[in-house]
Image 1: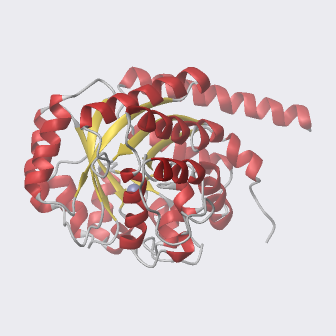
Image 2: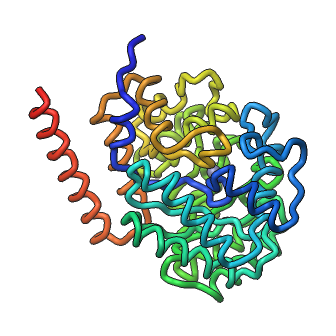
Length: 348
Ligand SMILES: [Zn+2]
């Protein structure tokens, strides 16, 4: 079948990034350099090209051990600055990402939380200065640790809160940490005015209702299994619950229910009227980038430019900026569409 969407066009599409992890978006060469410098052993062949080998991840646990290794390799404020800067530029602005809410998992690093946060803020500031990309932080709770640790983590997030830290997430293996027990940590965040989201990839559809009703989240990360429960899917469509889909990483992990590049769960979600956004999760770790995820979905599902732009519009609706900032992004996107149309007409 002929390629419907070129990579150049996919790259040019303005993107709003709501599902990308800091530790999963450090370029391979940087990850290797930091691990070596900070004395963290890389298992197997410490070759820069092979630290991320998506074909070799046999399960989410194996992937997460590499993810943790990157975290363990960040030892200084400047390490966090560099990781954040490169994540926001190499896997952000270079793909026309205008705005990102970046998931941050500070726990694997030995650096104290306030110093890690300071480095991340440095990286955000520098990336914005050099490229214009805007960003905020979602501090991610590790669901494989205890609920007491989750509460303690949220207390730390609140203690050192800055304007850039806008919410919390729930990450790592869902089977090892179903959402319900984490309600106290999420309630603490709610009371502090932090927004909330949670990953749900491998759990049953009912986990989505726990995330909405007991953790009081306003978004769901992944959530592909929603399509298997008609009532919950209808409810989520009516309430315009955003789902942050990550086509390539979920396809490799088989979580989108296909594993064959068809991305059919995402099509089903769109067809059910759900508010779906597209992002790239842990781009270099899964051999992808923001352009590639739009490109893959566009070609697999036969979506045209307007349909792909809808993912970006959905992400503007789903993001946690205030209404004035969302309106500014919408207007900028509308201007981009007008500019794109006039360029196309000139070329004809
Ligand atoms: Zn994720």
